[in-house]
Length: 169
Image 1 (cartoon, rainbow, N blue to C red):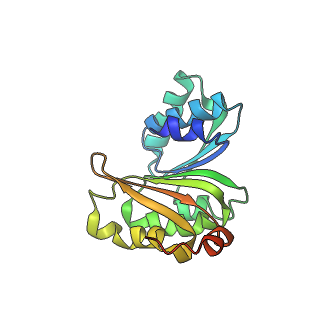
Image 2 (spheres, rainbow, N blue to C red):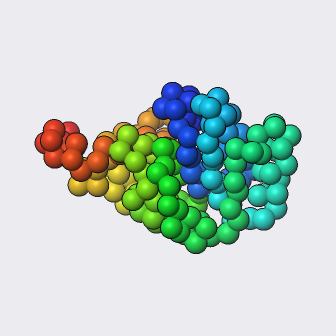
């Protein structure tokens, strides 16, 4: 699914919160490569996981399309500075809203947010879902009933929301 979203949207700048061993990162990097180039910026707190992810990406021949930033994503992604086409928010649920709000200014209109673990951590993720499903925050969002549920959101921008009088229903 991640490859399909990234490839179909022609994403060239992707941010992934939560690299782990790089499995999803490989799919995202394939899409960036197939889209003609770009970069996946991925974050990982655990150095051993980041190292294994780098090895997996090298084995797949995709290292040139990925930058793995080790450490706290709130520090490593601060002042990101580039328009984001796709944010894959799959890190610790307690930090997903903070990461989204940190990167929100850089997510371009039409950019997407794909979030894991919505159903698995239902109570903990409720403020996150409320943020994305609140029209005042300029996203159209839906919970996808896939395994432990995923949230799929598209940033529309305030002008579009105002022009269509979108009220979230």
